Image: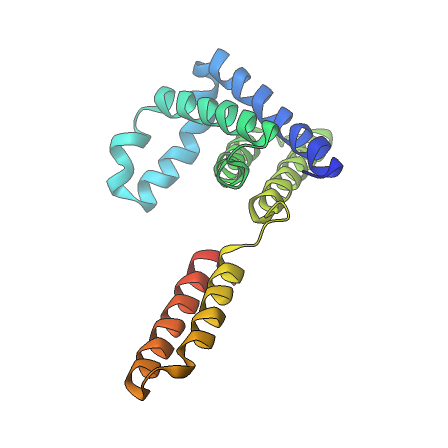
Length: 182
C-alpha cells in the first residue's frame, strides 16, 4: 500500500466512523431527520415500506454501516466494498442533512449549501476509493489477460472449437465490462 493510501483512507474513513457513532448515540434525532427521505423512498419503492416504516431501525443500520465500513476502509480491508457502502450511506446522509437544514435566512442557506458540498465531496472521495485497485489488476484486465492466453492456446484447435472460444471470450469481456461498468 502506498503512503498516500495509508494516509488518505483513514482520513476519509474517520468522518464516517464519527458520524456513524453519533448516529448510533442519537438514534431518535437521526430517525426524525431521516423520516422525509424514507417517505420519499417508500413512495418510489412501495415494496421497501416494511423497512422504511421503522425510522429508528434504519438510523441504527445506517450508523452501524458507517462505523463498520469506515473501519474497514481505514484499515484497508475490503476497502472497495466498504467504499461502495459508504457511498450509499453518504448519499442518504446528504439527502437527510439537506432536507433537515434550516433555509430561512441567507446565513442558514449558506451553511446548508456548505454542508451539501462537504457531503458531495465525501461521496466523491469514497467513489475514488471504490474504484481504486490498490495497484492490483482489476477484473477487466484479468479477464482480458485470461482470454488472450486462451486465444494463444487455441491456435491448434479445430475451427468449431475456435468459434466456441471466440463466443466465450466475448461473453467474458461483456460480463467483466458489466461488472466493472467500463
